[in-house]
Image 1 (cartoon, rainbow over the protein chains, first blue to last red):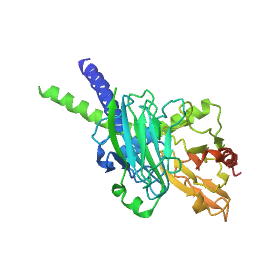
Image 2: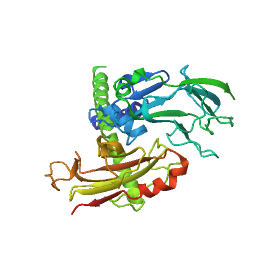
Image 3: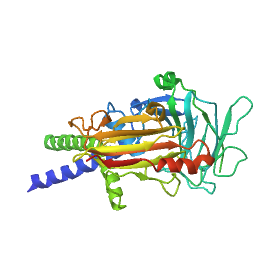
Image 4: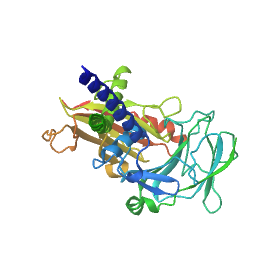
Amino acid sequence: MKIALNSLAAAAIAVMVGLGSAALALRYPIETDWVRSGAWKTNLEAGSSQAGIYSRGRIAVAGLFALNKSETIYFLAEHDDDGRAMSSRCDYRIEGKDFNARWWSITAYGPTFFLIPNQLNRYSYNMNNLARDAQGNYVIRLSSAPKDMNWLPSGNAPRVYLNLRLYNPDPSTAKDPAAVETPRIIREACR
Amino acid sequence: MRRFAGWLLLTLALAAAVHLVAVSLAPRAIMAAVFLVMKRNGRELNTAYHEPRPSAERSFVVMPSPDLLYSVCAFDVSETPLRITAAVPDTYWSISMYAFNTDNFFVLNDQQAGAKEIELVLTGPGRNQPAPGARVAVSPTARGVVLFRTLIPSENRLDELIRIQKLASCKPLF
């Protein structure tokens, strides 16, 4: 009787620990699969049949139906340049320039990886609709409060993520994503 | 003490096994959930559905791109291959196919299509060429998802691109 009870308790604890640690591993993965550039990171195994179980699981959770890297490279930013998690409590300047890709865009997401509700229905900026300076550089203003130019609303999101998509990157970019000069993410005022 | 250590080791080994199985099965479980949601919404397999432009209120997938129009076709080719047709616009467009474990096993974009219209046949694992001469994609699993993406390069082209998006179709070959 005692052995049966111990076995049951061990099995219950094992299932809880196993499932809990699996959920954590998929939500907060070990970084070995990722290539970093500034505050941004990309998983080169997205959509690949060569992906390991953790990469495949993570992509399924946070980026189901991602394209493989020859078609699109996805850079994800979870933090600003100083490593602080982003939220709508703070304003951010996203400073950058063009990329060697056929098309690119930067989109903001809330804590569940869905688009952030806002009155303008403005969820992203892309290479065609950004206001730029004379040198072609741009500054996107990620904020819950209206800004004059390139305002990307962060609504009321306790966590904000940014996704930079490079569609049909040129071969050198696809070969070495770490060399991509990703935008800086500078935190400004917080409320 | 030794008995306790034995139980602890057994529990940890079992927990590790549960962990690995859960991580391995997560993509299939998520894909199964996609199929279940589509079924609950009255959507049939082997049929293309044209999604409205993603917004905060409506999106069928996590991390959608608001610059894209998506059409989706959940397939089951265990009985018959699928015939897939689409119109190809003069902007970024792609058709991508995902196995039931979420692997992206096929992609074709507008530049690779090289024509204003495309037609291809999607068949399951281990099947013979079902339509001689046709462009064929072979899924490693019987079930999966076909996704069409159409880029909206400017807002004033939205209506035109929605018309083109809706020309995409998935139908059983036989």
